[in-house]
Length: 286
Image 1: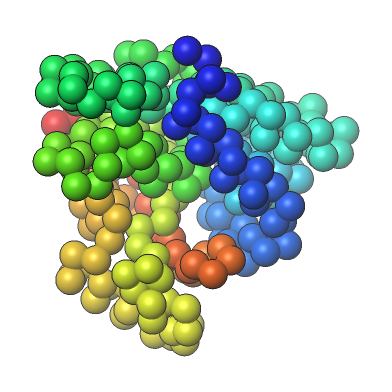
Image 2: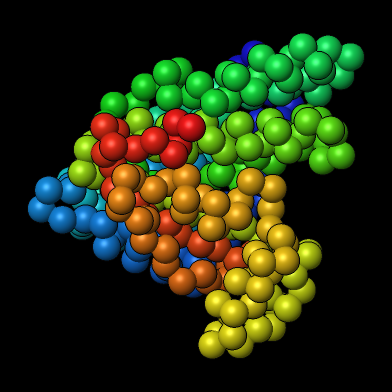
């Protein structure tokens, strides 16, 4: 089954279509994301891989092209990233290479089958948990100085819930397997000494309505309290993500959370930056 035929992929494609013209609405969120990514560039870090870039509304590629010599854009939605590249200046476009039709969960077709044939759920889920965690051996995109997951992880996890429903007794188990596989994939794609950056939404105004109106100087306190109360998307506890991205004694850098307003909903977003070092890292593989 190709991505264009996948029922779950079509859900994500439709989301991209709905937000395709929301460049201005993403302005504040994009400034945060672009600034954090640009901050990872240096003389020795000039090659960037962006995972889950979609329409490109999350990132200002013109700005990033002034910091990086080579930028790979990886996404399931080939049409979205090609449209994104098509709007770039000639100078920026020369530094950007799109990689479409890539299922960064590696289990999308399996999830489609699971959704269509729930009677096979037990056996299928057993194999999917293993397959999701084994992701780094399945998708080879080379190694990069900087690898960034751009608000992708919540979408990968959401594919699980689209397939089996949030009340399924093993939905959380599979969601965590997808999370761990994605973190391992980031680690596999980054060169030793390079930087891996996870940017993800982790709670929304659906369960934390105060996000809509909280003052800027109270935002960190609000989201810390939400996490302490276990109010976050499944698998996206920022404290756990930081622990699992730790490289030996090197603690990941955690940026202050910010708000991402998408129409009537509001999300809190975190960014966690870790140093690549495959010989030292154990938490992700474990």
